[in-house]
Image 1 (cartoon, rainbow, N blue to C red):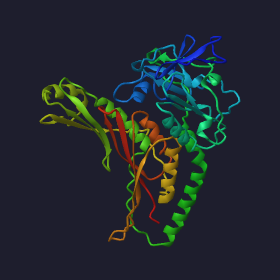
Image 2 (image 1 turned 180 degrees about the vertical axis):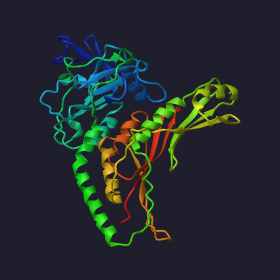
Image 3 (image 1 turned 90 degrees about the horizontal axis):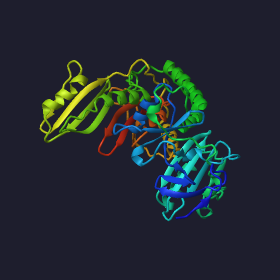
Image 4 (image 1 turned 180 degrees about the horizontal axis):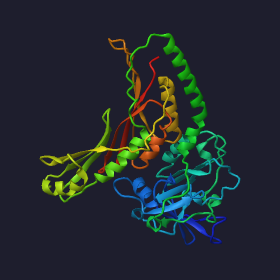
Length: 422
């Protein structure tokens, strides 16, 4: 197994070596790689944020704070991480690199394993492990689509413009690295506001989009005054905003995680019906006792609700209250091509996949103008709230459904993005 000298390490003369797929050692210190980094949420206690980040299958039990507690990296002892280990993404001698840098580094050892780390606006933008050089090179190319990188580190053989070659041992330093700690050591609410790379990207669009929306609204107002009024139905008028929809759904879906003996959860579904939001859970249990299931769900059903059982399948549907904090962005819908371009660019710049289907409509027989739209869909194993933030400043969006399947540990969100037919 390959060893490399690490200038600037806490231990004088420390050597770096791989000890597991997600860990390296520098001297006697172990360093954790590939943490899930999220903004510190001032509205939630640390324990609650760790639970939500981990999804319905179980929360994270380890965390590390970064950048003045504005950002938190989550990990779990299920991945053989332990308190006291150092968070690798914070262990770089990056003086002089600027606020936006990206590095692809080969890990020591015989395995062809790579680590991609990036910072944007002094916040951790990426902390990902890749099993092959080809996979890492493809991931680096996706990250390079984001603008304004001040320094890029990659092998010379990859032939990326302006990229510099560096070994892991030449850039790693433990002097400023932060430690992993147990989540349950802190029960107070997080007091520091946070920002993530997705929000930083949204700010790049903010002012220009506000100005354009204002001009479009004024032009539409002048047009409506000059032309005869045509009745229109706005499908997004009473719909919840996407972030508020996700937040409300997650709270209700958590209450529906009920596992009596003999029953397993097949899926959790939260949907906007056009008038309200409902959440449902479907159980499968060939040998499950319906009485046990109803007893376990009795504290959650609420007045007038109940578990329906048919053979080995059972279902419970409950309303979702979004609360007073719900808000959505007003303004006229955008032109369809512009809307699709902005959405694709945001997801692509973060290396995320989004499926977009275009739906064009013509006026119906009554002369009422219908709205063309984009149907959006994406899947993720964690961080579904951050996906919602990518869409939070776009007008005329209607959340359709949020689905979680515990067997695959996958979240799926579908959204309708309406456009102006002109």
